[in-house]
Length: 195
Ligand SMILES: N[C@@H](CCC(=O)N[C@@H](CS)C(=O)NCC(=O)O)C(=O)O
Image (cartoon, rainbow, N blue to C red):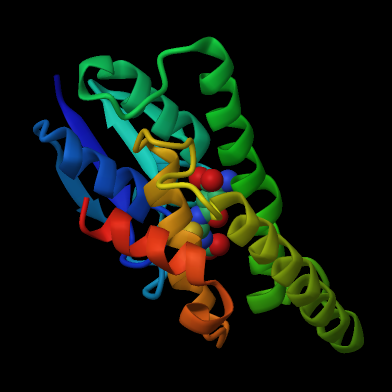
């Protein structure tokens, strides 16, 4: 099997990147530098017309979206135990990942790149402020979710955990004092980093 992961340092592609390393399977990491705009170049658009990372190429077929890639990697290697066994737990993992992708990441993007959603200066400023408030609400939800838990799904480390680490690291990018504000999430991040 030939697997390639298209990634950019620090981007949300970090989650499948960590999982590929943990699975210990052969794969080729392909750098698509977002800061150099490589995701918008013709060569990459042929791979992912959405111009985003991550993208996973498996034997010539391309999968995009973290939720799908993480589900594929977790569920595709059940013996590695990175994906819940019970359907209900799987649905819970999907629920968390879908929320991270469709709500938390979108609020983050509105805070750091309001130009994605508006072109008027006052509107952009307003989106930035509003999305920051929404993001802080979501971060508080994550702190609550991780309180009293070893990993996001409970005792089992799953593909959801490195996905949460992405947002933990991004907290610093928007100037949050993660250690002080989110002690349970901080412990979780340290557990994930040393897993
Ligand atoms: N919904 C997608 C979002 C992917 C996404 O937005 N990736 C960012 C990096 S974290 C990106 O490629 N941004 C490039 C850009 O906006 O130009 C997913 O969850 O995979």
